[in-house]
Image (cartoon, rainbow, N blue to C red; front, side):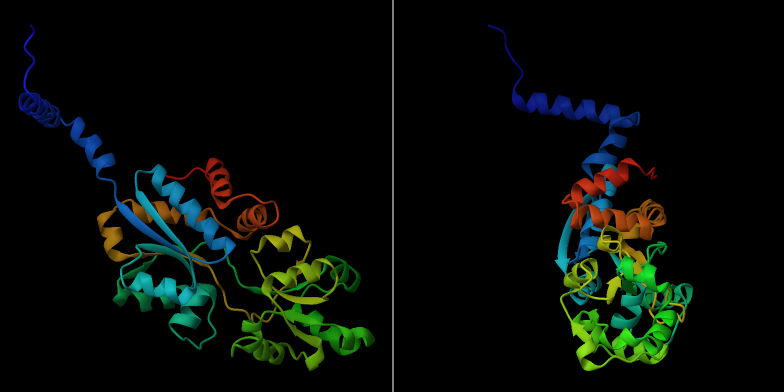
Length: 311
């Protein structure tokens, strides 16, 4: 009968073999890059764009060896609180949200000044704003394509002039979500900035999604929309140029806990490269693929990563 070595002997032999391999720098490198992959918790808000951004980020970082857990479906303040409390390592947030909601800033700031201000305010909290993306998910006044073409309106100032001079203007209805209608930096200061007036019957508070549908069906002539929403492109809605720069910038930016960056030296460069690859057109297409074409955020993210070379 053949005598087999005992289990402890086999174990000791395996350990000695591993140690010999580590001594020449082979197995140790593999172990450090896979068995001990960094664990990152990624938080996300509760709308399509955030689900897509979270999926793109998670897939990208996993392909680079990170262990990423996604926790999505949160409101802005809840997500922010979890980030500050260390429950999240990174999120995608918006410069305008940080300035107006978290930091309560009242100043009218350019996109670059706003980014620098929120970045500086978060430094003592050990939250690092990496490079802001060109993606600016701000508000816009949208018109149905037919109305935009026949009227020739391209800017909000031109819309204001139309409302003052055209006989049919008294019957035009402006649709918006309830939050914008009631927030102090929303409807009233917008109307004051552009000198527009609407009677109570001309202003309709609606679910945000219904605004797009009503514009598409020509049930509304004016609606409040978001610039990167996929339904803007899918429904042929024409966003007007905010020529007096009323709406604040909302540039999407990766915000990461300082500790996570210190533990992962390549993370900042990787997220900055991803941020640079995003813009309004790219995001509109991805949002449209989910909201109108019925694709999953996972599939949309996979398609994006296949067509973009990232470090």
